[in-house]
Image (cartoon, rainbow, N blue to C red; front, side, top):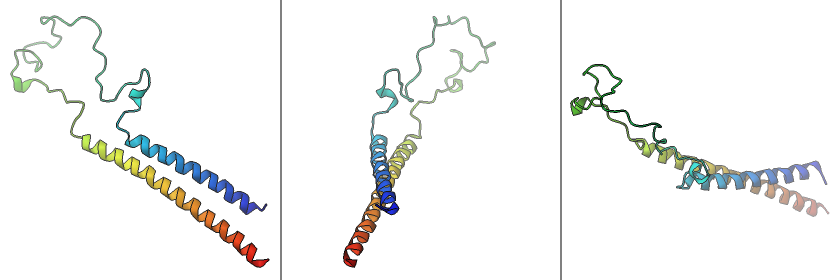
Length: 134
């Protein structure tokens, strides 16, 4: 067997593995379930953390001095800080990024399959040429 044949076989094996892993990556990135939540102890990035430890502070023990603190109960509603929701306006950007990642993996898989096909056609052409010379 020639060196080119061994190189072609190795390249076909590597390209087949690349195409398989790219398809698995594409399917995993399209999945709606988060990977971190699938394992024990793994949390979702959108989930709020555990509740703070210890008893809640009594209303009289406010660490902010003076009545000008904006988070006091007697402050006007407009002056209180508003907590941002964990699912903000970038949900659309996350969704687009997730689909772009899946499409990137799918294109890598298609390129690997096409390259493996080209190598197979070159090998077939070599065998046909050898057979024609006999």
